[in-house]
Structures are given as structure tokens and as C-alpha cells.
Image (cartoon, rainbow, N blue to C red; front, side, top):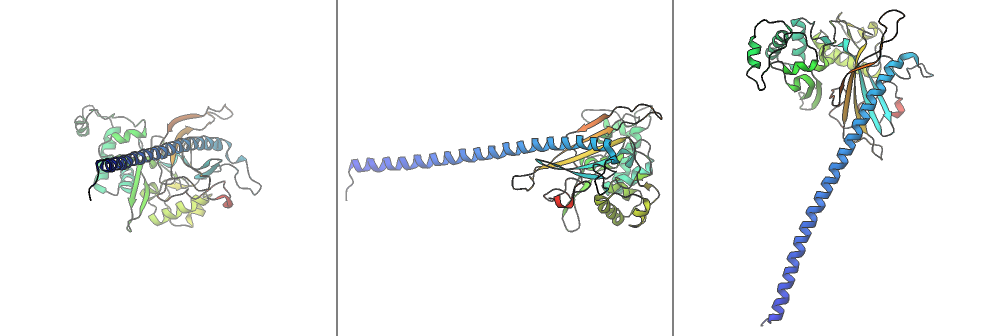
Length: 350
């Protein structure tokens, strides 16, 4: 059977149309995928920005609640705002935030601590005795006077850019990132695996050391788990303390002693006018669930105080503001908000 030239041309045209249709379909699929990806990216960016504003608002609200203190009470006698709780859940129309309230006095003074205390804290966080000793030696060198360049200075001279240790007191805790042997994971904290391979968050040296810290006693309601273990509290007792204070603050040392043995370097109700507030926020979706996007913020503030009896109050001062403040207590590896504490009724838990 012979095929005419006209039929051959029709077949060629049909084949061309089919190829063009396939090409246009591929282009349309590529464009739709790009549009969908960009839409999701913009949506995530918008959620992140809203959650960041929510975290910042929670920090500012927490500062106000500290100023109001325990004077305001609910009908059942519970604090309406804040009464030395270590953390609070704050609820907003668009989402929720968990805020940690940490007095700087519940951290070890990096400038005044002895090398032995520093070693115990660094070892509790790093889990590496040899590395901990090297870091402590570098900290002592950094804060100590030296008329001539030290061995550590010679190391800093090999870096790019080069610098020399300050050889004076730490003015900001972030200077610790410059010390030889320090890493961001050790300073800020990181996720680590337990014996079963499950990841969990662990805090860093930033949670244990401060330029405004003290030498003790440390507040049992707010001291970090690593600092508690470094100062002699067994790990199982430290975990029990954290579990208890998430739901109810300790009022007396007798309440705390019922959990387990506690060394004399801890007390209840210790604090000062320097506080760090850290907030983690998630948006609530229309169906009531929480978004996976988490944003954090923190501020170190000096609460108004009287410089002399009967004198005027000093103004509130925000000494540090952080747009990113990762915390093991507020950003767990599981999806969803941490357990609510403080002023939130049980019926309103997510």
C-alpha cells in the first residue's frame, strides 16, 4: 500500500504537533513547580517573620511582667503574671511563645570563678576532660594580665585576622568564642544523641557563664542543668529538679531537698537586677495546630532598682538584644510547643 505525499505531510504535521505539545507540557510543569516552590518559600519566610515578631513581643511582655511582679494575683491565689517562675507560656491571637526568665546571678562569673570551677563547668558541657583543661587555660590567659605575648597570643597571631587576647576581664560573654579551643556548638549548645540514638537538645557554656554572674549560691529555679551537675548535683537529681520547676517553682530549700541531695552552693530565690529573657515562638495554623517554623529572641535587661533606701528608681535598661537565641529548654527536637507553665490553665494547653 502506497502512502501519498499529502498523507505523509499530514503525518509529519501531526508528529510535530505532538512534539510541541510534549515540550509545552514540560515547560508548563517546570513553571508550575517553580511557582509552587516560590510560593512555599515566600509563605515560610512570611511565617518566619511573623514568628520573629511574636518572639520579640513575648520578650517585651516578659519584661513588663517582671516589673509587675507578684503583686497581682488570680482569685485562686496563683500569680497573675510572674512570681519567680523559671518559664512562662504566653498566648497571643496568632500563636504562642515560651519565655525563660534567667537571673544572671544563677550563672557562674567568668571573671571571678576559680580555674577549678571553670574546669568543672566546661567539662560538664563538653564531656572531654583534656579539651576542657585546654579551654580553661585559655580563659585564664585571656582574663589575666601579661606584659608580653603569651603562648596563646602566638596562636592567635597565626589566625586570619590576627589578634591578641585582651588580658583583662571579659566585657561580653561572646568574647568566649575567640578563646582557643572554643566552638559555636560548645558555646551555644547543640543536639546530641543519647545511647538509643535519639537526638535531644543540650545547652552550652552561654547558659552557665556570664560576665554578670556570681560565685554562688545559685538559684535552683533557674540554674542550667550543666551548672547544677558541675557544682555537685547528680544528673538524676538535676533532671528531677528541672522536671519539677517546669511546673512549679521551688519556694524553700526544704521542698528541693525532698528530691535528692543538694550541695550548699544552691539556694532558692537568689537573684539580682540583671535578667536574661529568652523566648521561642510558633504561629498557630487555622486548624489549631502549630507551625513547624520556630523563631527566637532574647534580651538581657537591668531591672529598675533603688540605689539608696528611699531613693528614686533607676530606669529600665536593655543591655543586650538577640534576634536568635537558641535554647535547649524552648526548642525541643519534637514538633509542637513545650509544656506550658506559669500562668496558663491546664485546659488551654495545646
